[in-house]
Length: 338
Image (cartoon, rainbow, N blue to C red; front, side, top):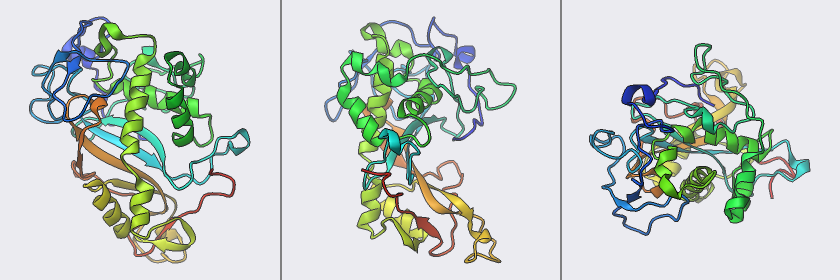
């Protein structure tokens, strides 16, 4: 996980009503947006008219628009996926989905690419906070470990058994129960979006419906990003016998997505391998993650985004080795997918 490069305490900067991080009132200021397609049926339903501005645009500021109706803080949205080869919990039935990447999360970066985390400790459901302070440093506010029932138990009382089943198939943790991972993703990231702030649910709020709202939204972004299919269409499939080039991965995923995503790798660095001996290329050599960047129209929950290049803020677009045929897209371990 990334460590924060900027912590924004909006309650200090803007002044807030009780229970709000970003200055929204507790009135029914939820949003009937001018949609090109029907709105999502989410627990936080919306009624008032509000123009959906593009996040990170000149209109996406709380003095211009309702922060519940246009994402004004986490305006650079990242839908992230992982390629793991095992879960470590196969004996308990926790396996990876065959022929697809897994959902990792939905993250709110600020428009300059920096970000904050664990923004609302009243909605902290992470059993093992990582990092364990709001800034990732000793000067940050400590994030207490959550000791209550798993966040996975919040879905059934709200009638979301289908969502729970989907998440258990595609939103898979490595080395910990899925519910612990979901609690981490919600607590660290969802609480930092303005459009997922609790007052945005208005009077329709029921206990934990904000959690369902975030999970449904993260799933919808993921469902529109078939990483495995885009790579496969370009002839790039998992193999322990052949290697691929970063440029080919970038070409295939940019063609599918419409913008250049961030491609992450793990494993040994290329210049520590026999093939890369003497090279200055110190990129990693095992394909492991992809981050898709968006600016979004209106609420993040609309799932209507404008793909943007991962390089939009001048940062890195990959941690992978750049040498030709340097990257392993590994097969899953036997018995680790189903």
